Structure formats: structure tokens, C-alpha cells
Image (cartoon, rainbow, N blue to C red; front, side, top):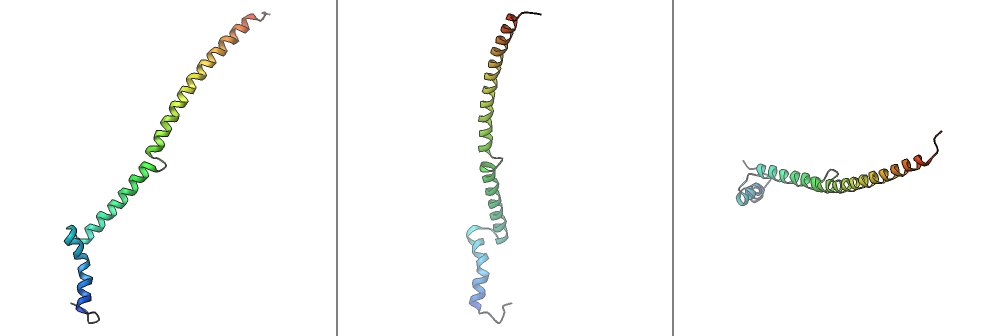
Length: 97
């Protein structure tokens, strides 16, 4: 039932907006809005996954840093072995009491 305050043309335009979505996309307006919300939420999640604090970029940086630390540990172990050898050689030269 149409109201008396609006003309028939205004009612046709207002009621045809949801019909346009259904006509061109094949979805009801409610389904279209739910799908649109899902796409927006999915895009936000994916962007956060790729560029956020717990992202792929951060993971790759941490793996690179882990490799750097592993090589630093190997270098320090070698330096420690050399210094221990030098220490024990010097200790043998000291007179015993």
C-alpha cells in the first residue's frame, strides 16, 4: 500500500534500488551486503596476515636474523676454543707450587 505523501514515481524509485542489485548481480540485497561484508573482513585479515605485527614479512626477517645469530654462535665457539687453548698453554708455563 502506497502512502499518500509520496508520488507513485518516488515509490517506484525507492523500491527499485534493491531490485537493481538483484537484477544485475543475481543476489538479494541482504545476501549482497553479507557477501560484501565477508569480502571486506577477508581483505582486512589478509592484509594483516601479510603486513601486520605477526606477518609473513616479520617471519622472514626473524628467520634471517636467526641465521645471523647461528653463524655468530659458531664464530664465538671457535674463538672460545682458541682462547681456551691459549689459556691452557699459558697455564702449563707457570711454575707449580
